[in-house]
Every structure is written in structure tokens, then in C-alpha cells.
Amino acid sequence: MNKLASTIRCPVCDMKKINRSLLWNYQGINHYFCSRQCLERFKSRPHLFVGDPQHGLSPKQKNQVILKKRRMRLREIISDDLKADLKTSLQSLMGIDAVDFTDQELYVTYDLLQASLEDIEKTIEQAAARLSKGMAEQVKRGLIHYSEECELDNLAHLTKNSDCH
Ligand SMILES: [Zn+2]
Image (cartoon, helix red, strand yellow):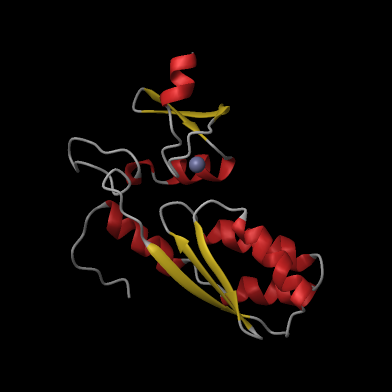
């Protein structure tokens, strides 16, 4: 068991600090994760993290990092306190590269392999709901799930041409 703990890494984010209660068996192998976020990310698209004979190494195994920058418009000008709150909440997620604000816009840069738009959206909604009902709804309406999912599917199947733009 000690050997397991010292050699295993979270397959999604590479952190050595795994939580033994967060495991999932995929293709006959137990994978251990650092967080519920990473576990869910893996379960939704395991082929992004584990290769197979048909497709070869996974994007993660090839050390690909797909940074995505997403802009969210905010209906209200938000306070500096809320900005700080949102930033702290978002940075507690795995795979967040940067969080920036203008008066009515929020920019989040994240690694598509590690963080999903759903993770980000949920975090923003939770933070926003503490101070402003209208903003949470606006954020929800302003986000588009389709483009991200499309990009991930293309990546997973190593498709050269995409009609997803
Ligand atoms: Zn992880």
C-alpha cells in the first residue's frame, strides 16, 4: 500500500496527493484521484487521460495542455469584494490558469483537460448567488456549453478537420 501511495498520481492533474476514497476502475485498473472534480473529469472522458491500442497515447499522456480562454459578460458592475470572492473560488478549482476582470466582464483561462465549463459555471454561480441573484442567472445564460464539448471530442478522436466552429 505504501508503494501505491508513493508512485500514484492523479491521472487528470498529475498531483501526487491522491485521495484513496476517490477511485474508479477503468479497463481493469484502479485510478485514484486528488479531488472529486478530477474524478468526474476522468469519468466523463477517460480516453483523454488513458491511451488505448487503437488511438495510442492519450492527449494527457502526450502532455498536451489545451488552454481555453472564456469571456463572460456580467449584467451588473460587480464589487471588488465579489471579484475577489469569485477569483478565490475559481482558483480553488483544478486547471484554472488565470482569472481576470474588467468592469462587466470576467475572463477565465483554463486547461480543457482538467476543468470543465460546468465546473467553472457552478463555482461562479455559487459565488455570485451569495451576493446577487441577477448575476447568477446572467452568467448561466451567457455561457455556451457546445463549443467546449465539441473541442474535446475532436481532441479525443484526433480529428484533423472540424466543423465545430
Ligand atoms: Zn487531480
